[in-house]
Amino acid sequence: MSRNTPAAGPVLTPASAHPVLDPVTQQFVDERLDRASASLRDQPLDLARAAFAKAQAPQSDLPEVQVLDLVLTLADGERLPLRVLRPPGRSAPLPIVLYLHGGGWIMGGGGTHERLMRRLALGAGAAVVDVGYALAPEARHPAQIEQAHLALLALIERAASLDLDAERIALAGDGAGGAIAASVALRVGIAGGPVLAGQVLLCPITAPVGQSASSRAFAEGPGPTADDLRYCEACLGAAPDDDIPAFVLDTPLRRLSALPPTLVITAEADVTRDDAEAYARKLMRAGVEVTAVRMIGTIHDFAVLEALRDTPPTRAAVRTVAGFLRSVLSLNDQAAAP
Image (cartoon, rainbow, N blue to C red; front, side, top):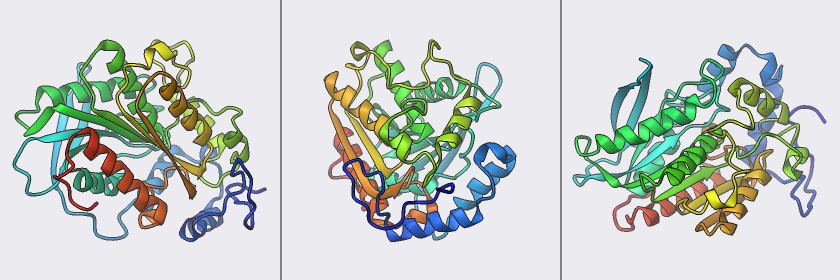
C-alpha cells in the first residue's frame, strides 16, 4: 500500500481497520496523496512548516471574536506569545480555556488552529487562549510542557486585569498539543493546584508509536504515518525516564485520580486512536469522570484541519467540546452557537 492510501471500498471489521471515510475527507486524503512527494522526515523542516501553515490558511471567513495578543517574558529571556480569543459583547469575567495546538511538536502556531479556537470561544462562552510554545527540535522536551504550565500560572496571576475568571479554567489540545495539555493537567494534579475544571483531548498523542491495533492498521495513513510520528518524537527528544513525562499513558493509576473531568475525542482512521482510548479507560479506572467519543469516517486532527472544517465529524466534535466546556465551566446559559 502506498503512503497515505486508504483501503478501497467499504470493508467492515471490528477494529475499523479499513474505514469508509467521509466523502470530503476521502477527497482531501486523495488530493494530499497526489501532492505528497516525500515523508515528513525527508522534507526540510522549514518547508514542512510553511506547507502546514498554507494548508491551514482560512478558506472562508473566520467566526467573529475579540482578539488580544500578549507576550510573556520567561526567566531565560525567551518570549512566549499568547492570543486571547473572547466571544464579543461579554462584560463579566470569562472562564479560561488554555489551548495547546497540535502539529507534532514541530509545526503549528501563529493562527494555524484559530478557526477551531474561535468556534470554541463562541460555543463555550469562554476566553480561549492560544499558547505559542516553542517548537521542537529548536526547543527540546520538556520546554513545551514547562511553557504551557507557565502560561497557565501567568493567566491566573493576571486574570483580574484581563477580565478573566481564575476560578474557572480548563485545558484543551489536539494531537501533540493534547499530549502537552495532558501532561500539564497531570503536573497540576500532582502539585495540588491550581484546580482545573476539565480537560479536552482531541486525538491526543498519549504514547510513543507502538504496536497497538491502530498503530499497525494505519501505519501508512491516511493522515500522519507511524514514521511521521516517530520523526516528530525524535525531534522532541523525550526519554522514558524523564522527570516530566512527554507521554501520559504509562502514568501510575495513583497519580491520575486528581485529574479533572476529561473529554477524549478520537478519529477512526488514526495511528494514535487506540493509545488515546486506552488513556481514557485508564482515567476511568482511576476514578476520573471521563467521556470518550470516537468519530468514524475521519482522520487524525480532523477537527483542526481547514479542509475538513464543515464535515459532519468536525461539526459534531465542535458541538461536543463546546457542550463539555459549558458543563464543566458552568456556562450552560451563556454561549452562542459554535
